Each structure stands twice: as structure tokens, then as C-alpha cells.
Image (cartoon, rainbow, N blue to C red; front, side, top):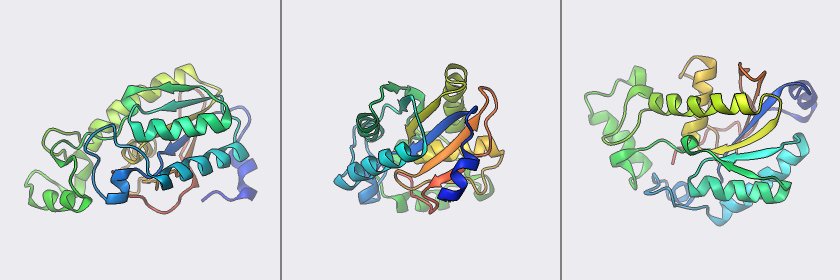
Length: 216
């Protein structure tokens, strides 16, 4: 967790910054179920979390734009942040959450039960497993990195808020660090800072939300 005394050291003036934010609590998070569609929205708690994270970002950064996943829960979070900070929103399709295929609408526990019964699941390489009709985390990583590479080119020195999902942020962390083991899954409205020079990204830093979240 980044404390106030560390902020000046961590936030340099000449680096580009991706201020990664997970969306606020969704209806699926509250019910501990994988969202059945991209149109599932925020709960009242999720909306409050979005306002709180906007105020936190205003204290630490000077962002120029909000980039959002197209899914409703992320876009609602982006709209609240953009309103508080008076910023425009850009929607990037490939920042959407992992497609869980046959698990959509199922509980988080159903995922754990399914992988235990699936002979193709290798617990040592869990990121390569995909549910029927869905994506693996490795699929997510490749999709997300294609989008992030474009953002690096377009915003080499800007401070950009990127509002996405737990699976997106987990996959990006694994890509940058080169390992899936220990990759950070932020809680709702957790913040991760990624500094970069327009080409290379530095090791992610947890700004808010050190505790682990749950997917969905």
C-alpha cells in the first residue's frame, strides 16, 4: 500500500501514468456471481466507491482523460469519476472483463467446483484454462495488451485513468512482472499505478486496495 509519505517519490513528473481503477461493486459482486451480461450495473455501494475513488485520484494525480471498458459497471464508474474530475471518457472495447462462457450467471463457487472436475485444468498453470465458450487469462492478457500498447503510443506522457475489471488488471500485472503467481487482483475501486515512458511499463504499484478482491 502506498502511504502519503511515499507519494512524492512514486509519482514522478516526467513519466506517463496509467491510473488503473477497478470498477465499483456490481450487482454480480454483491451476489458473488459472475455477471450474466455486460449490462449488469453498479450497486449503491459501488456508486459510493466510485465517488470516493474519484476524490482520492484528485488528491494524488492530475489526469487528462478517463479510458473505460465498455461494460456497464465500468462505464458507470467512469462516468462518476469523469463528472467529479471534469474529464472526457474514451471507451476501449478490448478492456472488457474476461468472457467466462458457460459460467456466466453462476456463483464464484461453481468455478472452483468446475475446475476440480475438468481434466484439462492444470493447477500449476491455472491462467491457461478456459471455461467452455470463454477465455483463459492468457487470452485476456493478449487482448488487453494489444489495447494497452495503443494507449502507450497515444498517451506517452499523460496521466490516464483506466477503469476496467479485476481480470484485466490481474492480467496486466502478470504481463508486466512476467509471472502469474503473485499477480494482484484488486478489490472494487482498488487503484494500481503503472508508470511508463511511452514504450516500457514499470512494475505496478498498489495505491489503494491492498487486500485481494474477487472476480465477477
